[in-house]
Image 1 (tube, rainbow, N blue to C red):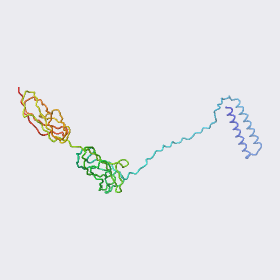
Image 2: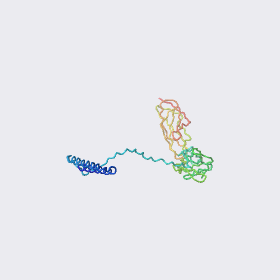
Image 3: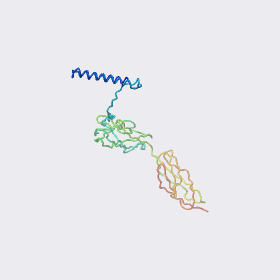
Length: 309
């Protein structure tokens, strides 16, 4: 600490001498100079005396003189925010596309002619002219045209119903045809983010399976000890192979459900069902086709029943 104080004294004296030297230019009187020098010498003696009597302080060799400056607080700058970059709307873009007819996986019989219609919105920035076309691009054409003009002006934001005439293939399978639009200069466009995806028609070609006739059969009358068993059957006609489920409706009450499998279109006579007779009276019997028709066929037979002691 003494060293620091001593250095302070030296600095002070240097300052005093500088001031005194500067005063020579303003006052050349020898008396004044002498008084100043004498005062300075006395000041040095006093400071030395004070320094000598002060206790020795521990000196930290690593300490340094430091000047502490108080900096005015600065306002934090807001973090830069990336500004979205505007992109131009595509000139030619289709979508959304709505199926007006023949939604995906509609069942169509082999060789059947049908008309597929899409409702297509112009979601681009340019107008579609009447010479724009719908064009087949891939998949199964299903007898459709290679291209067909729109024949109508469609402004951005407007929609148009586009129809093409098609024919279901003869093979039993799932078929899909992909279509796009084309400008009058031959540029193709469609749906999706990049306007390069097609829209489509997708059908399942399958033979229709339906029961065309169903009627019950049984004895003309029945008598016996009650309760007793009355045997009845059903005659069912189908227009295609498949399994038919059915049940009897007897006096408005449904029997358990049965099934009959057809290997080809034609008529089957089902296995006998034993109905339990509990009282004398008349039984009115019909056949209900549960699958595929969900239909109660009108043919009804009436069987008189007599319970004997």
